[in-house]
Length: 101
Image 1 (tube, helix red, strand yellow):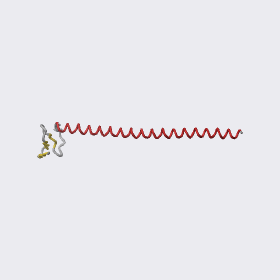
Image 2 (spheres, rainbow, N blue to C red):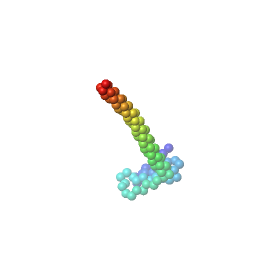
Image 3 (tube, helix red, strand yellow):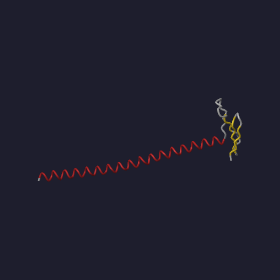
Image 4 (cartoon, helix red, strand yellow):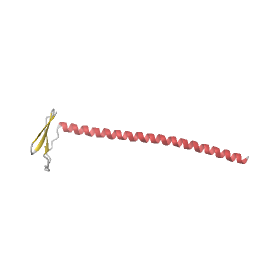
């Protein structure tokens, strides 16, 4: 459970299990940053980076799968067109052969 204490100069987030206190600038304080990274904030940052990386990898896998499917479809269409050309050439040969008779 997170406990938050606030005063007018800064905000402290105290989390159970953390050995350090994260001090955040007060609202409207645009001075030098006095934010300290705690083990918890570092773990959270790493976890978010890992989740982002996993999402990116999943998106790439989906794109690859889609391209593979499109490639398969195009190969099937190519085989059909090649068969149609072969049939067309056969019919043309038969037509010319019949005309010569």
